Length: 253
Ligand code: PGA
Image (cartoon, rainbow, N blue to C red):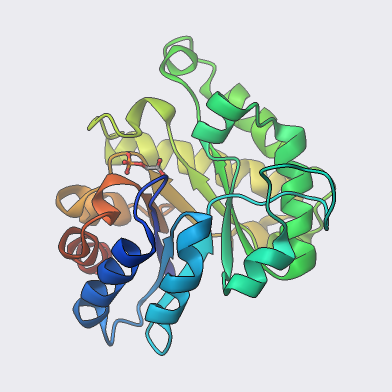
């Protein structure tokens, strides 16, 4: 089953508008002509407009890092799907572990945000992953099952076709510790197995599952060589054009 590779940069709370534009300006020639991978950058909200403008007429797409589920209203500090669309975003990250850890994100709110993204036509990247304690306590499968069944509750198979899953073991994010390719593949297999149970094999085989957590140019090829690893969600290594471009090239081989 050929699934197109998708490499997305999660800039987190980094890069002002001029800095973000400069990064994408530098990235454009380095990735020009690459069509074997979908290439996405996810800047902070205030940097979206500038980056969308700079990425215009290139193969780089732009995503946001979060959205609120309501269309509008009294939700101080939040941003709606329509606002992200207006800014030119085409993707949105949902339920990143930092949102879960620091901002009280739960599987229920992931589900609400996911519905809002789907309704507006934004392509959701839904993040799941276990802590070190959960892995060491052999609870990884349980935790991922709960995150998938809660986060994807009520989603139809045709909606699932538009959703990307990002598996990010929390202990590997920003730590320099990457899951070994075999360990990541085992977990991706487990996730695909759950998707088969939930949505049927035909659909589940089409869903792209990204790996995230200290992915860099040096380990991208071996991770992407695994049959169930279809891309990457990249933090640190997406903040420099040269390393992000090198990672993309290594990922597609
Ligand atoms: P990292 O972050 O690549 O810096 O580990 C990944 C992420 O949090 O999405």
